[in-house]
Image (cartoon, rainbow, N blue to C red; front, side, top):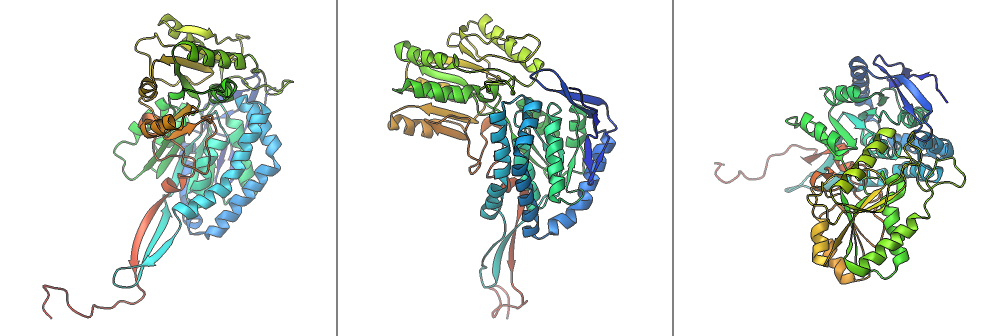
Length: 493
């Protein structure tokens, strides 16, 4: 299915054709071209930023309830178009329809959560000032912010930045992943239908050059990014020394799951598989390292997980029966994961369940289990796909040390029946998300999301997004100017 060229840009309330180079997006399941258009040139990016800058004063001064009304209309439109938008996500990202529906549901749910977070964490506070009068805490929007979206949740994750940014009174220039442009286009159309004023939200599509033009533009007051660690590094370096701009980063992790003294092997298998292979392993909270005991206990756990993997259906989103896993995002991503498996084996890893690629022309991968216990100098990197590395250790002390043996710190989990071991784990683990007897890939939007170390900063996209979308202004005030009754000490009467 080949699409006509799309007007790739939405600037100041109008759909426009970009002046950059042509590019296209493919359905990863079958290779069909589902979107094509021209990227935003540097001049186009400048026009989008100027449109946002011009729209900012009126939007920031607009009554909060009016902004909320528009956001709630957007939530209603998401619910009204839930099935259609989910099918667009399946086309763009290869997700099974059941999973894409949950993504649209999370997008709609983000509105109420963001409103509550705004009132809980920002908004306006009144109190008594020392010596009389009022102490007031207000929050102001930054101005024009850029939002960069990833491909794995092309609707939900950029939405997690855009919604709280608009709620706080910012104007936004949104650059989605070049791999999933269609979801961004359809989402912006719903914002337009919701009545968002011209220039408040602008869309620039494109590849690396468009992203560089947006990130380096002097007219933005901040950038909110969810995506890969290498891109996060690039943005962090690009923003170095620009203290006036806020940079919020949600990156990845080499996430550990420790399984210890867990009697229910069916539960171990279920929660491990849900943590490792949902979304074809393309969630930043997916487990990358499974840490289990040596000898028979560990063998039994691994066998149960391997048996569960036998039941997973891998296929296209529209297959019948519906699959658990779709393809990874691209042939390039699949090639990289196959190469990573080969390198682990060359370094001494033992394959328990090999990642296979049934059709070399398409990026469908079966889940893989690889024992890397004997691999020396294991690379501390995020393998973003359905590959689970298994590490066997002799003691729970060793398990905690191994779990923390990463420069990242996004997510960690423990499957265990012993509450005392859980108390040790929650105290000693180094991660921003730490779960007990729950899958790692089910984070709550009503809580902060993000990690420590090289997993990012500011806890972007979830409940604490309100914190980085506005800046606090502390005020002492009284409506009448009066002198004190007595002169201060050291001042003659």
